[in-house]
Image (tube, rainbow, N blue to C red; front, side, top):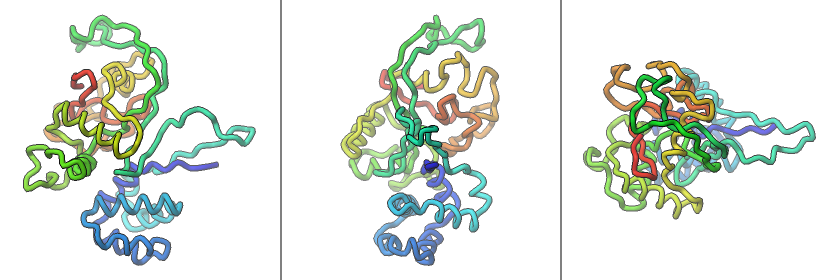
Length: 287
C-alpha cells in the first residue's frame, strides 16, 4: 500500500505550530535533515523555511520522521490538523488504478493542493420550492455538463499570494502595510484582489509550473460546491453555522483556510466554498 501525504495540512501544522527558530533547530538536531539546515542559512521567514523543508522531505521520503517530531513537540497542533495521509490501496491484481488521481499536490512555487471534479452533469441554480434563499438570478434550475477539471482545495492564502507578488513584481493588496501580510494572517485567504489580479496570479502560475491554470467558470465552481446530489450547501441541505465562517458566527473577520475542514467541505473535499470570502470566477462573477 502506498501513501499520499496531505502537504497542505503538513504545511499548516508547521507554520501554525512552530517558530522559525524551532524549525531550524529541528533540521540541525535531526541527522536526516542536517543537509537542509545549511540550505536554510540564506532563507528568512517561516513560510520560506517550511516550503524548503517540504521539498526536502518529499525528495528524501522523510515525511514520517517530520510528522513524528511535530507530534512529539506540539501534540495539540498535530491533533488540530490531522489526518496527514491518504492511503491508496492497489487493486486485487496488485496494479494501481488507472483513473486520474483525486488529488494532486504541487510543491513549487508553494504547496498547492488540487482536487479533481469528475466530468458529468449536475443541476445548476436554485429552486425556491427547496431553498427559501434562492435568488432570481439563480433560477430556473437547469442541467449542465461540465468536463473534468481540478480546483484548489483551499482558497489562495496571503502567504501564497505574497510569493506571486514578489516574483512577478505585482502590486500587493492595499491593506498590506509596510509591504507585509497582516500579522498572523499568513494562512488566511487573500482579500482585496480584483478579477485582473486573480487572473494575473493564474497566468503567473502557468509560466512557473508549466501546467494550465485559470479561474473556474461559474458552472465549474458550482459543481465543485454541490456535487451531483442537488444539495443546497457544500455539506448538505440544512444550514449549519458551525460549518462555515459567516456573519451568524460573529467573527467579523477571515479565518485560516482549513478552519472548517473537513466538516464544511464539499462532496469533492473542497474547503471554504461557503463563507469566509468571496471567490472570483472566470466569468467575472463573485461567489
